[in-house]
Image (tube, rainbow, N blue to C red; front, side):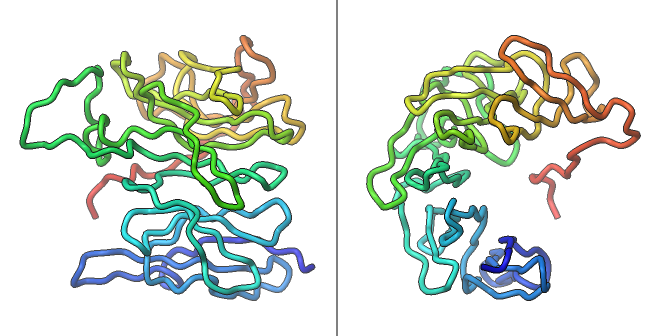
Amino acid sequence: MTKQRFVEEAGTHSASIDAEKGETRSALWLLSVETGERRRLTSGQANDTAPAWSPDGKQIAFLSTRDGKAQVYVITVDGGEAFPLTSLKQGAGGGPDWSPDGKWIAFTAGPQGEPPDPKKPYLLTRSIIRFNDIGYLDATVQDIYLLPAAGGKPRRITQDGCFHLSPKWSPDGNEILNLFMAAPDSHYPETSLQVIDRKGKVTRTLEGWGEVDAAEWLPDGKGIALVGQPAGKPIGSKNDLWVLLHQGETPECRTAGLQYAVGGGIQPDFPF
C-alpha cells in the first residue's frame, strides 16, 4: 500500500463560503506524500473536520455537520459514502481518536439535555460562567465519551464539570491523555493535562504547573511531550516544548535555547 497521509485542506482547495447563509464549508482530502497526488474524500457540502486514521489504515473517522449538529462519521479510504456513528442531540465537539486495537473511538461532547433557557433565570454554580466564543459553559462544557467503532451507544467517562479537549489514546490502549480547563471551582481558564483510564479515573495530572496548549504521548507510552509555559509568566510569554516522564515530576524543557516560541497560533474567536 502506498504510504499516505490524510490532511484537511485549508484555503481555496477545499474550503468554501456560502455567502447567503454565512457558512463555511470544508472537505477532506487524501494526499500521497510520495507522489503529491490528491483525491477529494468528502463532498464539501458541510463542515468536515478533525480526520483520524483507523489503526489498520482502512477507515477515517471525522466530525461533520452534514446533518446539522456535528457528529462522528466514518468513511473508508477507498471511497464511498460516509456513515454516522453518533446522533447526539447536541452533537459532538472534539476528537475523534481511535484506540490502538481499532475497537473504540474517543471523542468529546457537551451536555445532551436541553440547554438552559436564556430568557429564564437559573442557578450558576461555577466561578467562570462563560468563555470567549464558546458562550455559557454550563451548556457547552465537554466530557469524554467512548464509542464502539463498530457502532453502538457512546459511554461518557468524565463528569467533573471541566471542559475536556483533545482525547488521545495511549500506545497500549489502557489510558487516554486529554487537556482540560475551566473546572467549576477555578477562577482562571488555564488549560492543563491529565491521563484517565477507560472508566474515567485520573491516573496522572499536571494541574497547577502552568498553561498547556498541546500534548502528545511519547512513542513508548511512558512519557508525555507537551507545549506550554509554567505558571507565573506574563500572558504572551514564549511557549516551549517540555517532556513529562513520571507523575509528580516537573516537566523538562527541551527548547530553552530556541529563539522562537513552539506551537503558536491565533485565537480563533477573533472577528474577521
